[in-house]
Length: 215
Image (tube, rainbow, N blue to C red; front, top):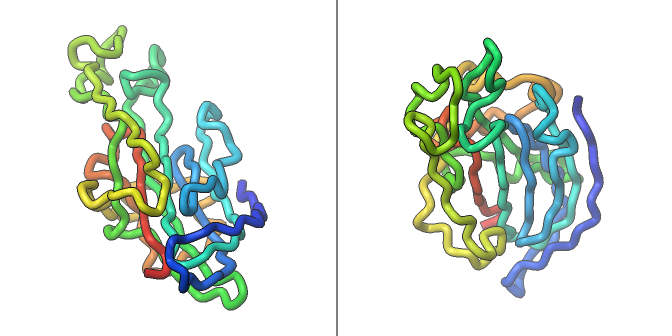
């Protein structure tokens, strides 16, 4: 299901010559996301990540002073630190992620920015490190094939002055590779907008991503 939200945020940028613009953001993620602009929360996925097959798109309108930094926290569902889903059932597996976003001038409908390989993403949860974990009859996080890695979330990572230059560039994926489900097809995506994730669509479960608009 697609949800349309309106947010009357005025987001300050550090440059005195900033241009104020009302933007419409379309975001789809597998499975959950939160989006910030210059450190302020703009929208959080309205469907809890614990909802089975929680696929949906969100559309939000907000006002920002350009240039602005957009930050996403994106999560693929996992039952625990094994990184698996449907544990103990015949559907036990490693899930896969994926997200896409576009930003339009709310007045003209012109595309202002899109997700692509220019986005920088830091992986903060990776599991399982060994894909054999998905075949375990009793997978236990941190044991054997079910080892995992957690990276501490940096302080102020959503702010405009945070230095993300050491973060890897996002990897672009095709629709076939991600297999986007409910909500994706309800949006008319700009041809330049790309599905992105880290370099590992399956093992990397939680990402922090950043991009700039209006630079």
